[in-house]
Image (cartoon, rainbow, N blue to C red; front, side, top):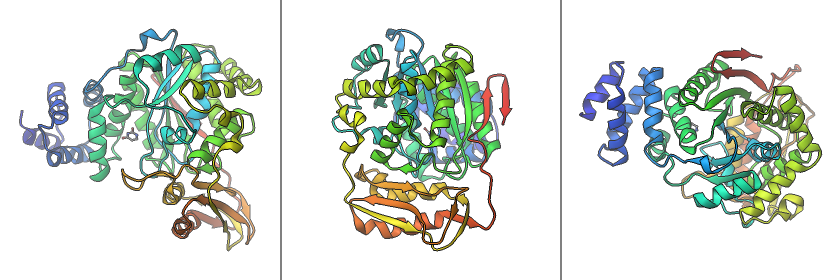
Length: 440
Ligand code: URA
């Protein structure tokens, strides 16, 4: 096999065989194919696409490029969830303990922030002492004992994805449905859960900006999961508006804890209840209505919050922070962003909100950036709200006042005003299962 011939074949829109895909991924992971040739292949895939069979083969060879985690020593059904990434998306911190409190095991490997989107592992690191790089044996033992553990992806989980993602990030080849599907599903299949709920975000803060593209992505990923005998389903959820009001690491942990207390923002609570109920349903805990009742009960009786505290403690963190969020460090500086006009907020550029938070130190501009865990933004107004001139749109937080000016400009520009009231679209826009697509 010559990589040159494979690039040419894909450039001409022809189908790559299983053998060609396997050899290519193996050779790339072994550094036998240079980045410039793999970049050309990625760009050819962006333009020519891949059919379902090619995408499934690419996913499997990426998954098998490293460890395939065997969760069989954890008792019961294991359910996983994956979000395609968004702004203010702290759902894992809420859902994982809820599902565990309902008696279904969650052995979750999460990632760090990517571009303007936040990552669960960065958020959890805001809790002092917490260990997120945990050896497999201890990880399994925590899941068996507590019911839930969220850890960072081990270095050898789908290494092909790690290498390809880094290359896609710098060659404008991220937004390709087959490449995103293979990237996400290779990690999910390697992570070993029996059931996978995909939260495919759609809108201005997501990688997929339209509902139709998001459904296409969801269909591919569900087909790959089911083909590998994992019960897989996807919900298409709104990311045209940041989820909740907080963006930033400790800010989002605090909002997640408030949600587990039953005092979270309405949109975040609704999305988390729907996602958690669907995870339980996938895991065979009953029909959706029964599952939703179980979820609401764990919030009401405090068992979900308790689960989070138990998980944090088992992973070496200070569980007092979960029980009393006043313990989190306050940022040194804050600044109100004042509206200089009146009107309805008709749209928010949600990607810009994520960038604003990153500029304050909550996310990474480069791989080497050091995070400021208390930095971020608390939005005061969101799409659909009416604003008077002089109202506070949002409050910026951070340890470096010099970063505020640029972030303020970005956030201010993210708000689009109109004279007319607008109606927000539903939070869950579609559901994609093996045999069905339901649009809401
Ligand atoms: N998240 C991933 O893990 N991979 C992608 O390609 C996009 C989002």
